Figure 1: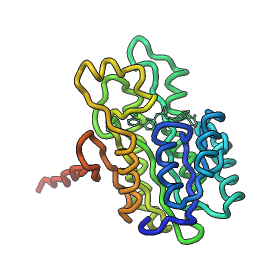
Figure 2 (figure 1 turned 135 degrees about the vertical axis):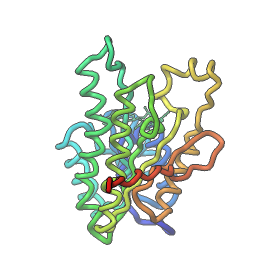
Figure 3 (figure 1 turned 30 degrees about the horizontal axis):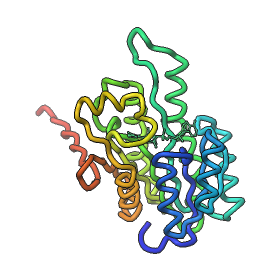
Figure 4 (figure 1 turned 90 degrees about the vertical axis):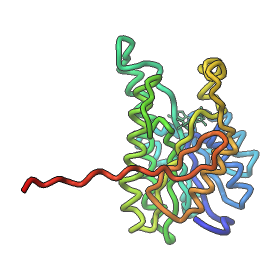
Length: 250
Ligand SMILES: NC(=O)c1ccc[n+]([C@@H]2O[C@H](COP(=O)([O-])OP(=O)(O)OC[C@H]3O[C@@H](n4cnc5c(N)ncnc54)[C@H](O)[C@@H]3O)[C@@H](O)[C@H]2O)c1
């Protein structure tokens, strides 16, 4: 989505804090009407009040809740132009001895079901009025192996796969679909590993750099791209290596 954003309407999941709240502030400063969704009602309402937006409570792992949230956006503003499917959590277990089926389902529920449900809920509203933009928050963990949280790596790869798939198709409906893929960034989600990251000399990405990458993806006018974000580098679409073609035996 290029140019003037005034009067556009955005729905942001995981909007109570971190990337979601920061993108909400930037979009609101550009004249966008923002509706935030999160499971954290108090924090979400506070951000919404601050930016003159609205808050609709929504657990993205619920199909019905995503449907209801988008319906509330459309009821309030009559349209939807930008869906930022950003809610996400870490897992809390691996696939080895400590595997916990409940933690596994919870992580997949938020990180991949939440993006599929959010995309499906937003599709019709984005398509109406000439199309729009869907941006999902994946991660560098969706582009490379992440031994520290394999289930997170699995669901973030799934987000990348989904974005590349519908990102090739949905432009037929006027909807561009892209992902942002940050490395470790300075939000609450990294609190438990902050010490380890600092000891290892791994710098954290500033939240504003993630917002800049979101805005660049939004302004690109392209689709099916996954923008990697690394400290000190300008974000850009990750270049996937093409699959070698078939070799036919004579
Ligand atoms: N910070 C990082 O290092 C980093 C790196 C790469 C990707 N990400 C991804 O960025 C996204 C945003 O995370 P953040 O870094 O801003 O962390 P954050 O923890 O500050 O924000 C995540 C938000 O998602 C919300 N949320 C959690 N479960 C939810 C649910 N079921 N329904 C609705 N909302 C829910 C939380 O309440 C919170 O407000 C996540 O998808 C995360 O996986 C973060």
